[in-house]
Amino acid sequence: MVALDRAWRSLVTVLDAHAGLTQEDPRALAAAADAVADFCVDHPGTLEAHAASHGRELVRDWGGQRTTALFGEVRDSAREQPYGRALAALSPDALVKAFAALWRFDRRAAALCSGRALQTLTRRARPETLGALELPPEAYDALHALAGLAPLPDILPPDVASLRPPDIDALFEIYTAIPIADLEQRLRGHGHLRQRLLTDGESLGRAVLRDAQWLARRDVDRHVVARALAARFDRPSAELPGGGTLLVSATHVRDPFHSIDVYPVHGRGAADLRVGWLPRKQLSSLAVETIRRGCFFASGVTRADPAFLTRWLELR
Image (cartoon, helix red, strand yellow):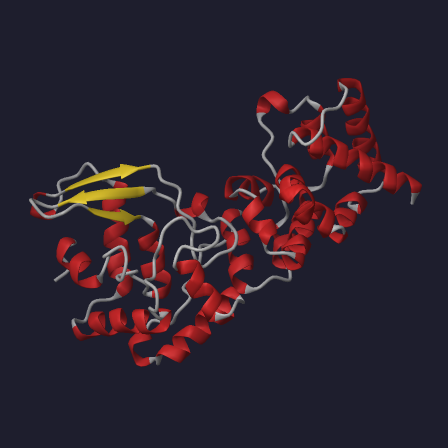
């Protein structure tokens, strides 16, 4: 117990110094990193499990900077520094388990960790470790997708047009494990989401059903729309229908149906679309995924509605 307490305090010392919360003497930092490394050699996985059980100290103290540091990326130039040595001593599998435990303690842990850092971590962990994680569908799928083990699956079935709005809402609730009212607030731009995808008073279930029924009446599959839109983002300099132009920027937009940032999996940025003399439209590549997985066009705000997209993509 004494050795574990010393190793834990040493790890916190390194994390706080890296996060800029404290200033430590370089020799003291080096000694702390060595203490972490020595303990991890003698007691594999123990320190990581201790971190998972002390979520309050990681997620809530200091605004979560410790969590960000614990699950951060180590640049090549910092691998020999105390921070790099301390993190290198920790087991990727044990860290993934610790992240899952922290997520269950407080979902803000996901927002504190960059998708790129979690991608690096999950690709170092064993697939069986990821497969055994006890997480709701959205978090489980996000980590598997970041690890390159499986693509992000559809949230809704193919025949969305046959469902009722409450059925659609229920499927989103099951997938995200949060009440539909909270999810709709996220879609309105609250929390970590940077863009507004639902208008005030707009229902997610009704918006999805409206667009699904529009597509069904014209015998257009949402997956066909998503593939065609993805192709446009993948070759933005190609000639576009109607003499339009597509100017793509590297805007980072988080997926509203995941607490964990999955942008490294499908991020293509955002685009400004100009067609003739018409007003400019801004479209995020995230629409590719929300359309494919949930028939969600965000038509109330971004105007990426099926009528415009199918006409622009020459699908009808």
